[in-house]
Image: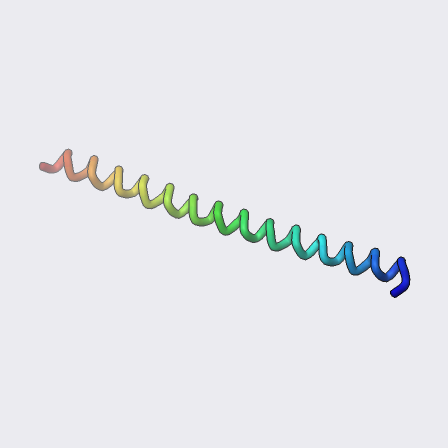
Length: 53
């Protein structure tokens, strides 16, 4: 395999890995954002509940 081609394949592989990592990080942020919203809503609802009881 020519050196240039090997370098190109390696570069593509690294870019792919980086993209996969980025997607994982984004997924984690999505989950955290979802949890944050959920907890905030729960808190808001309990506060609402306390006010009415």
